[in-house]
Length: 422
Image (cartoon, rainbow, N blue to C red; front, side):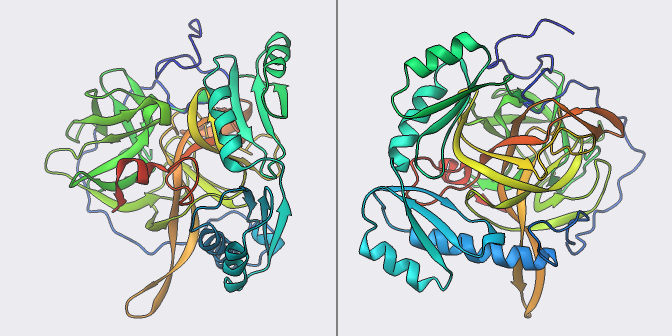
């Protein structure tokens, strides 16, 4: 392996710990001919349903009900708000608040029709976010995240000396643990137009490979959202094999770890993402987007390891290697056991999503994907199957959210760009 550069280096570094999921691999060979893609109805994940629910439809309905209620409660400016746990297996919302909960917030909660429990918090979301930003700007800090109950923050550093120094400089209650730095996670493999999220794309300017995220409309043109560390503005890129035309990178924002791929000549994007294994051709329609709340269940879909579900959100508004906001999620059970992977190098930029029930005319209910974010990083400590062979991936993942609640200190990728899902 080559020497490992700064944690904030972009694609091309050797992979060690927090996966920024990009990988340096040659492009796959060109196929003889393209067959038309078919938009088959979406199906639920093959993995066991988490949270004690009988079906994925039951889980989707319960989670959507809680998230919608949380969005309604937080639909106006809410000074004092600290955090929310929306775990569908709990059957109720836990909302943490600094000071007295305003009467109008309590009224909105009562109108949601779901059980809501307001709990006291020491600090507000705004106060915690300011400290996350300060810590995230410190090169010694790998990750920094607010505690959902508003009690303080948690951070990770690489050495005991850094731990002592960061604690000495803390401005709010802070727990600091020593942890290897996250790695940026740089198909599947041979996508064709109309391109879907979760497919492999290659940066021809640098030699790296990442995953496509979500098809969006931005500045009047269809584009593909992906991870910012996978390249720079103007880099030449290609989705799929050498049979596909080249395109370029635009709208690269390092601090958020997001960028977009322009539409290749005479090609287009579609509002679908791949499902299944790393070499699958199955897909699901993207029906909408939602903000993340602690306790939510999510799936990832990278080009190099495929679809993984049974992962739970543990923190929002997190700083990772100086990039924010990030959502942190991990597989359940959370262990680095072989096969318990959620992402690996090459999955960077791939879609993070949940499942929801949507009504299509004429009155047909379907399962569709609900966009959550794009994969950024993880910890390289978990054996998993990538491109058909065993490699080292991660059972934990950080991703750039596409949405945050309206009055959050941060905005999601769609709001930041002024983009909409295709």
